[in-house]
Image (tube, rainbow, N blue to C red; front, side):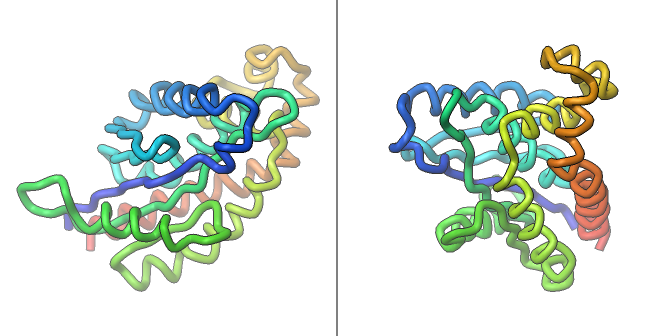
Length: 205
């Protein structure tokens, strides 16, 4: 089965930050930085809304975390930039771009209420694997500090080992090690490895 993965999101509290345009520009910068790595096609709408389509569906959970990590990492002092993201995964529509994943992702975001990250799929067994654990992951990301987000964002982008990340961010290796530990990097890596496997299995079904 051919699977398509779509992210639909909106910026959190975009009207309450000191510079809304800077927040919007920050989103565009993050999406631009991730475009090549994840093979993204992106669209922004309704001012603070965005939609992302991935070339490779198994990377969708990693991309969602990378977007949130990138935004939080770029937060100006005293503020927190972040986004709610709905992950939609479904069979692609033959001969056209519009498919089930778009509907699942878009409607999913509208119904998320207080959740900041959630997954929506046509497949019940896939949802049993991913829905609850994704809510736990959302709870971790919701508590990230800027430094924790910076460290995990660099980790996801393949900057290198902790020493390389420390040099890139102008911090000590010990500080980066502690930031990755506090941000639950090991558990998030396991989550991303598992979700990638599950999406691949869904594609093979």
